[in-house]
Image 1 (cartoon, rainbow, N blue to C red):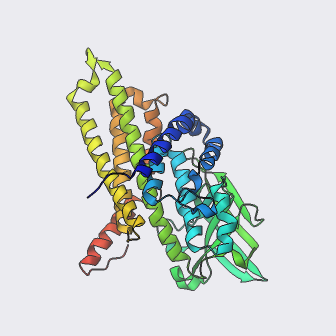
Image 2: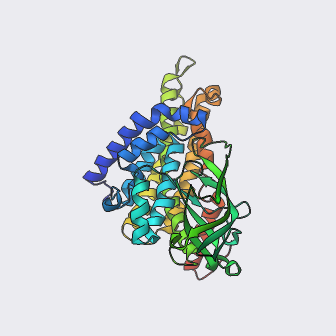
Image 3: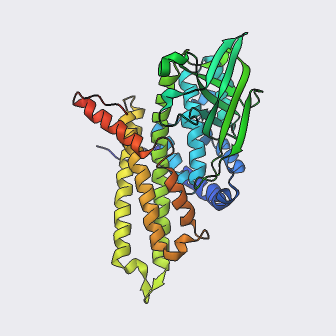
Length: 386
């Protein structure tokens, strides 16, 4: 088996790291403190082709494969998790769903805009429909030549900064998931109201909002994919997002470990650097080993996706383990910092808060475990439900 990156992938990896170190890292603390996405950095990322990384070149993208795209998210997350998740939501949830299900006219109209720097958002979750998105209450009714909406969407990442939203609503309420459809809604729509930014423990540079939809009309041609075909679109989008978040988790864990190593080498206690202490060495060894396990899961899931093979189970595994390792690594490296780790003057504090969010965003640990168990038991001929 060949675990080497291709020459092109290595070139992109170095390009991503250079961009993240020069553009993302200098403003990471500012992004956290101001609780706002780094707009200037995102525009520079768009100019480099990063906001349309996996889109076709004909539509303004860079035609990167999934593994290369994961290398991008990893590099961004090594410096700022908020920026990395902003790009992941924009690309994996909004952009690639448009690429998958959009008509030729829709793709030509919207994907170059997304690749060029206009952010995308994905409005699926509701106040009473989190992990169980089969009970969505938002309605879309076709009347007088257009779609009319009534509902509320919560925890919409990129909610305040996006120019384009993919909104999921029930078009045949009595059918559950089989009656769900997806729509393309622009921020300028008069029936769309963007609520206040949600205050969050971590990922403070990620703009999370509540959306209120009331009225219309949205032209009939802005239906995305087939009528009542939204559930399948949402499921595939979430699989892509799990893989993206696994790559983000890898970058966060690497960042935490690097911060811990640097502090352990520089900090002196009892006449020697604490890196000489066995307890610290155990922390470093454990974290380094777990990080490598996540790397292989991410690369394998991305390889499956690039080969056109089913990768949902691999993505769930990578997301679950990645989030756990990111949180555990940040926790141990904060402990390495001792009292200094409890101060916001040190970057490990931000990384620790960001890492905690990864066990919730994109599906909780419990959901990922269920999905993996479901796949395992299905092979044994046993069907289970949440």
